[in-house]
Length: 452
Image (cartoon, rainbow, N blue to C red; front, side, top):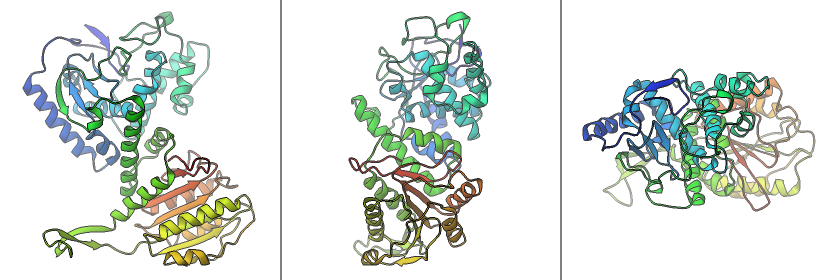
């Protein structure tokens, strides 16, 4: 039978959803390869590797090609999988992983499944392509979507599509004949052919029969409602993101996609605490040369270097008293764990640095400012002084006059690359898309929540 592959490719020939159990030798081969894939991508893309090993993956002939169940389980047809090259198998796993991480299988509800699938596939495949993944010819991408949109009379280029969100692409795609959300492939209106969706519908099984390739976390094995599942997946994504940032290996395109994944509100105090806990964890290593003082049967710890936290606190005229108090409160919290903090107050200029060795020093901080909001001068002060292993925390409302300046953007990107942990805390406006590498944390005074 000839069908289009699940990611929007050219027609391929294989048996679709044939009955029967997956042969044990086929399942075992897929398990070995799955573990090898995780090992192979870990050095370059720890974000993908850390998440993929937590996914539940099932081999089943109940899948046409590959899809994600309503419970977030990745299901792969062994026949389809074995027809792919090794590099394309990696791309297949990463593609389905991104559907889970982006919550596309939940966000598709109430939408035409075929159209939403195309929009999501396009965004995912373009991100993977920019990350260096080998995307097979024919999988849905910006060129495919631009061609589909042009049939509606709109002149849209592939470059325009690459800048769009899933929702924007979905709204521009042509109408597809049929009942709307539903299972299986279907021809589009005016002869437009749509791929087999790899996202679930209301009739999709929560846990299809098949051979388990990877057990995954409990969240994918135990039934839970959509809200709980969404919360748990966002937590996984956030943890993998922070670990990847600490390792310093996160492509800009992927980081932008992750930021979109994590737009839901979280408790930002908890988030900041978790970020610094992860960073502090990289400063210690276990060693048997010096056993633990409390338990001789356990290894002790060795501290590597003395890192500095550089805090750049916006004290311009747009910062209110409440924000200043909150900023100082965060510095106080950091001082509970770090004894080497250098604080720069800044508005349109950078004021002299102030050293903070303990929490009591925060009460003696001299807050100077009140002028315009230009960040470049303080960046020029800090850049020559920071080193790998340090952390930089910018506290601001985000309304920075020169943030779109090319030189300022370049210096912010350079600073993010130079240190181990760059954190941008803002109360109003996040960094523009051309500035990458920063863990962005929104501080929302209404309800004490924020987003990363």
